[in-house]
View 1: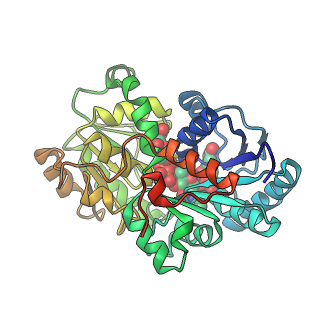
View 2: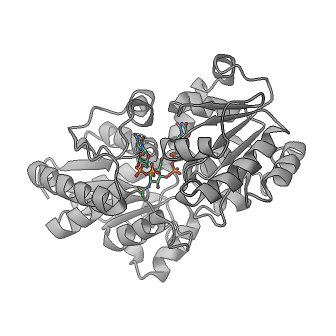
View 3: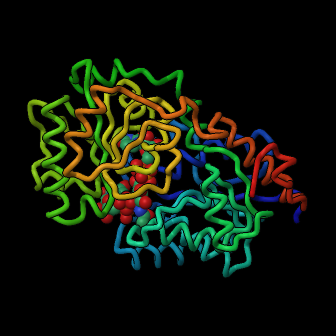
Length: 376
Ligand code: UD1
Ligand code: UDP
């Protein structure tokens, strides 16, 4: 390895920024030479720039501007753009995050160029290959050199797929590190006032293709969400993916529904912190509500984050069962099964990842035991 190795982080979509910030910060504290490649998968200011500001991320060294498209078109543009920039920058390690198309493309490019890679949030599985993210997860994990897991179930998934245990490190959850860091700034009052909400309200965020991509799914979902709004006033920061279809299905401003643009990280989590209930299909929001102790109903048939159910406030619901489940959650409040957060969700995942990366670049593959982390 070179004297002064270079680590590049490939980021493209909203949840990537949240997961990467603690890793970038911790590597910076170790004096690592590093840079961010922004693929441009998300490009609206409210889906991208606001996160760089809220999370204190440094300016990217490159923005590929790939934008939106079908899976094939977007992935093709990502492959072409990333190959060029990885060749030009010649990194010693590329770090990828989560399960989005930018993650998949970066892993493929690096595997073909022989550039080592690390995957943060490895081993999550919904076992639903109808989700584009599940395909991205499987391919990414199979090609990564270092795999950082956020929860113990991920370790058994990776073992079952034949990933050598020596590559895998259970490090906790960097998305929760970001939340820990933001906690002192999370104040619901100003956002509640700005949006004209009452003291008791619920938040909904919905963007999964299975929920928003067809008029039928959107109609079923919106009808359930509107029923929830008859029990508690609802604010919906709308992801651009579902904006038109959900509006066509009837999700528009009304006496007890407020549809707003996507919110910045601090504003959104402030709102969640003060909410009586969250309705979502987001991966990250299932984790954040677990940590904040806010009841969460996830409108999906499965989750790749079962610890948010076993250790948290999350429940899976169908659209048909959502209104009744909301009524119950509003009556019960946040009942966490154990009262304990998932292991290592303690705000120190970023430093753990940085230590493993630094040692790996020096040629030591720190055994999970010597890191204070566990592997199977
Ligand atoms: C992507 C990820 C998904 C993740 C989500 C986080 C994939 C396959 N999916 O889904 O796993 O949960 O990001 O938010 O990578 N759009 C805008 N402005 C933007 C970005 C997108 O208007 O800044 C609109 C475009 O119409 C675009 C659509 O949203 O076609 C979908 O964007 P895309 O990045 O393809 O997928 P997401 O649904 O955002
Ligand atoms: N988020 C945000 N503003 C919003 C909605 C979500 O800042 O209006 C944050 C949320 O707190 C979490 C991340 O975006 O940190 C999750 O992203 P998203 O739901 O888009 O993706 P997923 O986690 O489903 O892949």
